[in-house]
Length: 277
Length: 277
Image (tube, rainbow over all chains, first blue to last red; front, side, top):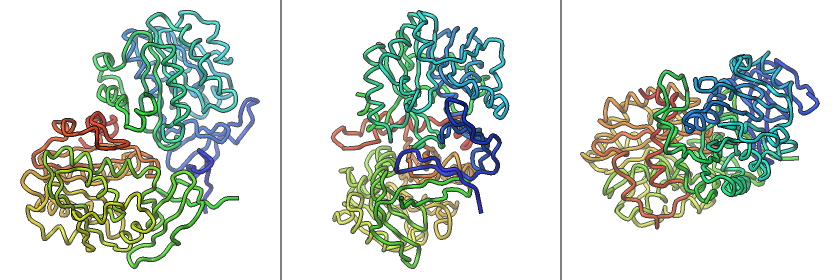
């Protein structure tokens, strides 16, 4: 006997997890269906529209890697924007950087913030930090209005279906570019090299057309499709392979990120290299 | 409507794959239950005792990484032993190294070799190479009798349950040590850092007690538990981080391995570093 949640990650493969308890029953937020469950393998899990968003067991990989790679690449990040990421995990990692004076979180669905604050305090714990400003609105529209505002922008988006599709488009990357300061840089999550080859090639080529430095890096996240996840950085000035390590302080507590990892994650398997050529 | 195969990778999590066709119905070989199916996501898949062994879609990662890391670490590997690996994928990669004069494959279950030859020619294609000798016997017993025979030994074992349990024991690693030449080295697959922390710590500590150089490295394999897989090398003389790249010839066709990957896979996420300290 057992209750199992199965996410079909593609039409042909899925992950299935034993559920111990439902903490927040699947409920329509007006934008998406949201649930919080307690799994046997990964602890608490946030599910949006049937897709695993984050779990207590492996969220550290995603959140550290989407935040620390750009924040250690920029020598002095003061003003940071996160688009998406209403659970607060990326904000938590950003708050570990003492140089950051302001972090803006633009999330389209306020319920994600509320439910994460209530059920996932381990992840959302820095959302009430006075340096953090939460703006509930469409990130695509928000970023259009900004000019030279941010040192670092992090696109912590869901999969490119429905309203999130626009977060993988060239016009959006141009708006991101314009919203950054003249030495700014951004990172977006860009899906799995095993299952989303076409998307990665297209996104890389869009970002290369806009930013002088474009680099893809990888991290291992068990609850995400294929277990291997990609992130793409577009940077106006700083090269992630020429900075990073020297800024890292061992007193910053991490479970995945290290200065060695900062370098190593840009070494791509041959089939991924070919995808971003 | 759909037919799905689900492997429970732990008691709490599994992978589920759409099956298009059963090519070889589950059958008892006398040692284990074996099946070959055609999946939607990964193409043909070999299943032993309900566990995914290898698939056409992602076998290249496992086989390249278990073979090329040791074979490019050793400056001149001539005689190589593979324990397990009856599907032939590791042998196929070994045969890409012109220095190799002899490769011995010791597999406990002859049916795996036969079925792989028949249904998985993409993987088993080098098993009839005249440099390859297939010995159907228990690898643990075989290796006990060898003294200073091999340059490289590759332990291409299933999970540490049942008869394979002995392949993760200190006494076995000592026998491997004695079966190697005085500058020999070996690699074993050592499961997932996300799910098998205790095993990895124990194995690392056993191998460290026997070999002067012990190093863990990682690769991403979607059909294996968590998608992140570890390999552990024990070496008498050669350090994988001081060799490798210069021996690689771009004319060798690979899809995962590159000289950069050879270095990068030894950079461990913090939580894995802590496991092998």
